[in-house]
Length: 317
Image 1 (cartoon, helix red, strand yellow):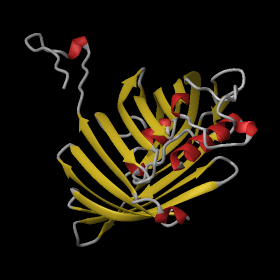
Image 2: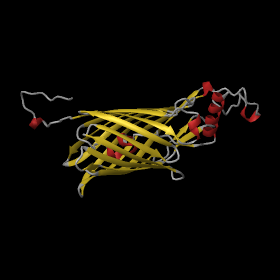
Image 3: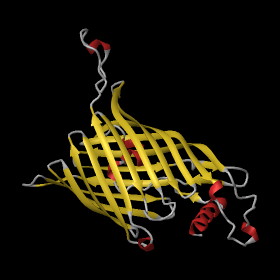
Image 4: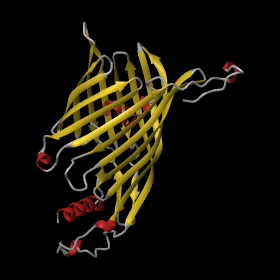
């Protein structure tokens, strides 16, 4: 019965034209900047590849499951610095599935003691709804009968063009970024009677790197603010990194969860894990949320023909 009610509520929300929050919620946002802000691509030397898997609200039926994979790199062209990258995203919640493929680009210039990037992302987003799993036989309300023609009984999907904008500034001491996703609020028209759309979301993030004098420890406070211009959510995070290799920390998501996190870096490979403990009423029905990420950074040297030696071939790592 609970599964049926959950599926029915999700459909009703979409049927009335809900402004859907399409983007995923990652607790380790500092490791997934390119997902939220296209201007952050190319911020590190070499190629940076990241994959993040999140299992949210474990124990709840049809709870969100999100997977993000991205890669980016800096490059120089026409005497200017740029960044480019790709985002692949898949998300499932209830009877809905979201996916996207987006290309990120950033133009970079020196400003004061750091780098300022202005970026954009373009691509396609997709949403699907599995109507074959709806079962409304327990509902007696004629307006929501099991043969209601407004309720799809098959799997439906729709695709739409998407675009985002961002600005990102970084120095050796910290970073700050502002971005806007789903700029034109792409719509998903399943049929003449059913449609949804991805609402415009603003993200503001920032962090500092503070060495502890006399100790091999660096404090990494950061914050992440999300808003759809009606409500907002704030993450406050404090991590400590030891010997530039191990880290651990805690985060508080306002009126939502407390997050514990830890990680390790092996040369150019980083692995991190976080666990969310709900502080809302969800605490009674969920075992928390798990999130795991891995990133790999490697150099990619592209040389001009004039720079190559005749007895050597160009190698791509």
